[in-house]
Image (cartoon, rainbow, N blue to C red):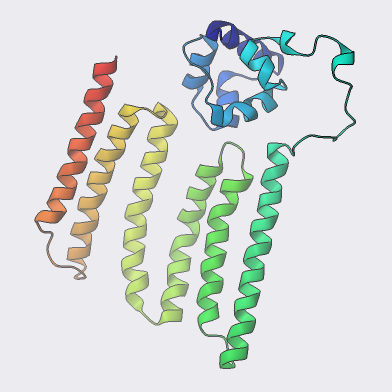
Length: 265
């Protein structure tokens, strides 16, 4: 398998499709640095995205692995042309929309079933309202991950940022427990800052040891911030040695990741 030849073929097909490296990377939800490594023959596409890459470039997997079109059948008689739509799997985009329909239908069916059972058993809506708003929140978070191509993670993070606080407020009113909203909102803000920071790190630097090191550093900061905030809110005792140990282990893990990266360069 000639990596250089495969990389050249990917570059040619990308240009024929009128795509930049950044645009192709965005469609595959990877970094443009990864695409550059393919095209210079330094690495090969991961098997998990190979089918999607072939779909975007409108080539077969055999063509990709052989670095050209000569991997096709030698003669038309060898493989008679198939009718349109015959024997093909649904494209990735089609599968995403079908999954979205199944997710929506399944959640609506579950909510309706809970509402009916709750009314039949207790004569009113009680616990089923908690199930309904929780299922709705889950749907809002999962739907962008399924539907959006190349931006599903960002879409889900945006949904979490927008809907978590209203969800906690509704949950606290249904449970009649105010700390669900007050403490939950503070924890949500801290967690969202961490999640968006992690997303930015991987988006800019790719998936590598250095990125993992930054994740460990951020997670250590998040752990310390959560422990300190919960103590200040009066919901937990002062941070103890176990809390400090978890932060120390994360810092050590970050140091290992950074050292591993330098050793591999």
